[in-house]
Each structure stands twice: as C-alpha cells, then as structure tokens.
Length: 273
Image (cartoon, rainbow, N blue to C red; front, side):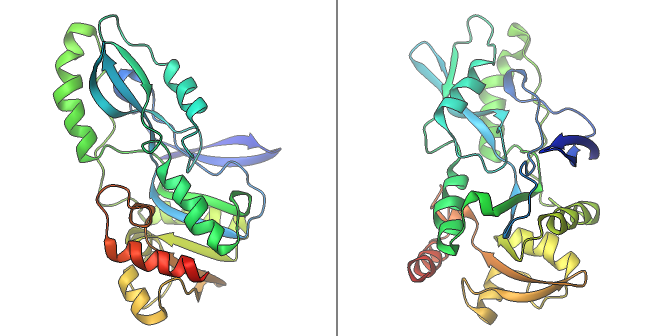
C-alpha cells in the first residue's frame, strides 16, 4: 500500500492505494474506498473489507453469472443505488459475442450498507452524515464464490476474446497489519468521533487488540462481559473512547450464510434501542 494526497472539501486528504493495479473481469481497475466527507463525526464505523459493484452477465437469454464483481463501488459502504449501478456497468465494454452486463438484483448490490443505515446507525440515533466509515482493508477481494465463477466461466474465454486476467487477490485471513492499524488510528483521530463501532470479530482482533489493552478478542467474549449492544470506555493511544462491538452486517441482515444467534441478538437489541 502507498499513500497519495488529494483535495476533498478543500482539505488535503491522504488516501491509500495498492502498489500495483488489480483488475476485475472485463478490465476495470480496483480502487480503494475511503471516507470522502472528512468533517468531524460522532461515530466511527470499522468494517472488514470493501465490496464491489455486481453485474448479471448474460449471453442472449442465458444467464452466465447472476452476480459477478465487475467494478469498485463508487464510495465506501455504497447503498447499491440502481441508477449508479447501471451507469457504472454501462462503461464496461464486452467483446462481441460475450453478451451483456446489467445490474445484479437489488439485494446483491449494497446490502451491507442498507444494514448499516437501518439496523446499526438508526438504532443509535445516527445518520450517515454522523458517521465516518472505514474498512480494515479498503479494497475488495475475491471470495470463494467469485473465484469459482471466474475460473469456470470467465477464464476459458480469455484467450479467444482477448480478455484481461483477473488479478484481484483472494480474500485473505489477515486484513490489517500494524502499518494499516496506524493509518486507521490517524483516521479515527481526524474523525473526532466519540464512539467506535466494530463490525464483527475481525476488527476486534486485527485492529482493537493492536491498539488498546482490552480483555476480549471476540464479540462473544465482549458480550459475556458487557452484554450485546452495550458500549464500554476504552483508552486508545491516551484517548478515552466508547467502543461498541456489534455483529457483522452479514449476520444482522441474514445475508447468505449467517449466524442465527447473532441475527437474533442484534434484533433484540435493536428493538430495545
């Protein structure tokens, strides 16, 4: 990862980019997703890694893939706006004979953002304007399902149609090292937020456990001590901040394979909030 300076809202903002370009199917470059509104916020939300814009790939009336990752989202925790999805996908050129791309189903673009807005921020009496959003890894990665589609449906066509190799790395187990932790700390300080929301186990283990002395490493351990949905005060680099670990949006929104236990726990908390 390297950093570059850009101007957002008349302020110099340091952004993170890969040391090399990664490519989606059909040629779009992976872009990092970072907080764009850098004004002070009330809550800092830390997720795991960025998602992507998904398209339905069709040849004639046959659907080759109902949801292929084809481009970076236009902003962090994008809500899947269908007009934006259509505009982004319309810029992607497919060679003649390879059919068309169209936005995937509405539940396949931006589902985590909808959970964030409706089931995390709203119960806390916050809106998106109150939140500074961040991921441990600010770029998308290829999960097992996407890797299977690329291998079985896309790669066999590469030679005949001159398609680019897909170079996005697979989903890692380590999303955040010490250097990245320091970058996130810098964002947390810039945000001036008094509440840090962690989405799932991984932000606890790979960020919080690096920068604070806390007596838990998982959401379950936190809940055993403080209860689900209760924040606790924590010292992070000599600053007291309230920390609130919650379930990952996948669990909260029942997005595919998920934990029913955490889904129920979150909605019980939400109904009391």
